[in-house]
Length: 279
Image (cartoon, rainbow, N blue to C red):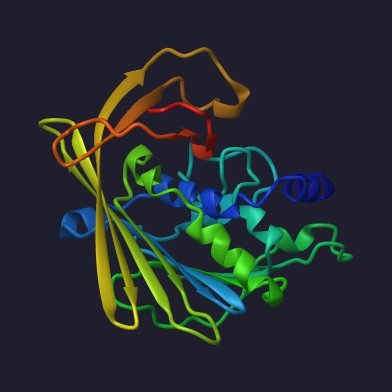
């Protein structure tokens, strides 16, 4: 089972960013919602590590068991953390050799390097880590120690290539932050925020970019239609639900005139630019 898990991870392309976003989307945010704060996930890229932070509720015992699983998804017990096929979270080992998770009362890590003698055991065996104070409002922090720091620029591109339209197809997260802190050069902090008006189906993605304390802002407008489909046939990949939501997002200008350009097609993760002028 462990060797098959490692094989499945390394046969995939670099989708770890989207897997982590999907897992964050599946989590619960009851405390943040009660406080009326933004539901967010942030990626901070440093030369030797990637740090994820969010204000989701935090890990419980079931979540720890789920993230140590090698088999099928346990989303009936704990939403998120491990991905639909039980290997989603572990795709981080495509780029990381150590993963430190601090959430709720837990602080632990996994260590695994491709080709190591542990045959994948390090991906599912938690190691105790010292507990550190988290910034106010941060309930979960995941630190990925990079396998190859020389690939910093590639990892930056992995983050920057996330389509800003991704937020339109999520139901919980309304803020995504992507920050890069190179060893030499200026730090760049980018914030994507989704604003929705349910009365007229209009939504806006605001992109705020800050470099050396100077900020610029772009607004992208969309007309969004959502339709829930029920009683779908059983599917082994989605065995715990028979529902799905189809979302169509049409880019428009400030005067609600259509903008004709290629759009991404999403199926839990962004697939590709499919050639559709609108989607």
